[in-house]
Image (tube, rainbow, N blue to C red; front, side, top):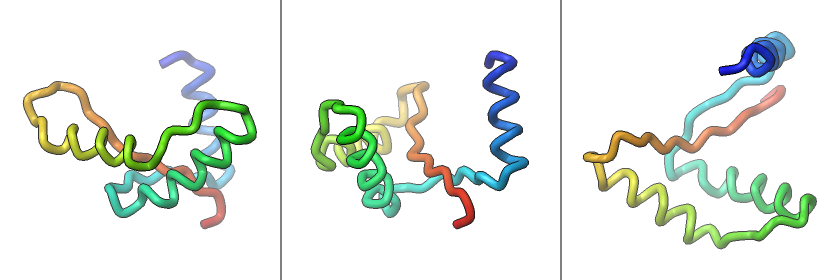
Length: 77
């Protein structure tokens, strides 16, 4: 990690930003944020089915060294 990235992570923590790992139960919250960001930045918007498939495939394939986690950052709840 670059020093600036570490600095920004610590700064966010000091200012009250928390990050939590959620499973499939948090995908609706995550997808709502993704939709808002993609629309604002004129990005290609994938359907939620795509992301469900990615998370399901990773959960079923334990032989891969890759780790897929769904993270949500929150500020003041």
